[in-house]
Amino acid sequence: MDTSVILTNEQIAHKTKRIAFQILESSSNESEIVIAGIIGNGYIFAQRLVNELKTISDIDVILCEVSMDKRNPLAGVQTDIPPSQYENKALILVDDVLNSGTTLIYGIKHFLEVPLKKFKTAVLINRNHKKYPVKADFKGLSLSTSLQEHVHVIFENGTAKAILE
Image (cartoon, rainbow, N blue to C red; front, side, top):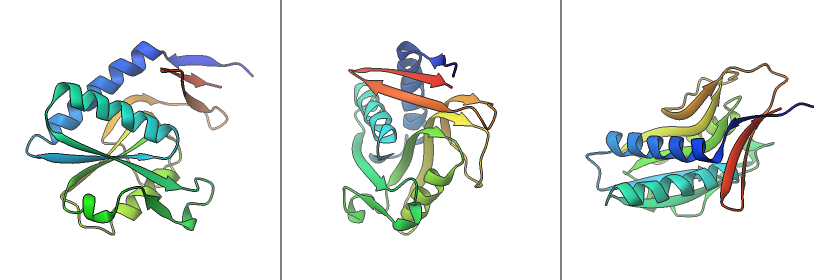
């Protein structure tokens, strides 16, 4: 199967920085924000966003890992911090690729059970094949692909790339 690089490491770094500035701008009235990354690549992308936010601002940023079985999201969602740490705060739910919207919608459902001050979503790549009415507030790249094509973000050894197969 043919693969194409759709984002290089440098492009991903640039998009991460831009999204961090967008998050900062939308949270300008906040003293603290929570960046919640979905387990796997979503969490790695969230870590990169947190690092950028810490270099461009003095706002307090809490990093949270969101765990779920992506093949069976009905099994439940957990976070590595207690709900009291994100209650009544601005929260951004982060994933690497928004494909069908299943993972993001179940993550959103989890956080809607706790009162939040503000809730947004961020993805590195937004595909246009959603099964659920979910959107990314912050996105690095919007990409129209066929249903047979797959987008993968690969984070390894401090570098990253996004490929289309």
